[in-house]
Image (cartoon, rainbow, N blue to C red; front, side, top):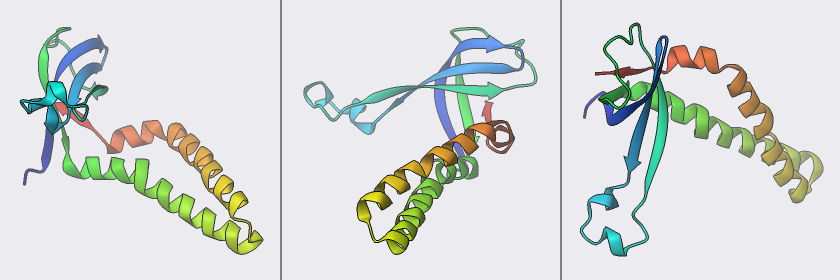
Length: 136
């Protein structure tokens, strides 16, 4: 199993030190012969910011391979999904224990995500240094 995750993309925009790459992420169903007749086939467009030292060799519309290390992907999944799930579960259990009211616990668990994602937003520049994409 490779330690690098790769996706083909198209350069959408170029700024000083940053290349915006549009990636078409499609499910395995897209390659299926009956995908036109099935509602399960889906594809999503993602815009990835790749910070580079030099943008001299890049052109808008150019096809590139965007890559990231697998450990960076795992870290991103933890921050985006696993940690918020744990926060919700802990808050849910804590409020049920303290109040005995499941409705308030559910609302509190959902509201606990607001400060978590605000914190992620405020720390986005530090996170950018830890999770990096590169162009091959």
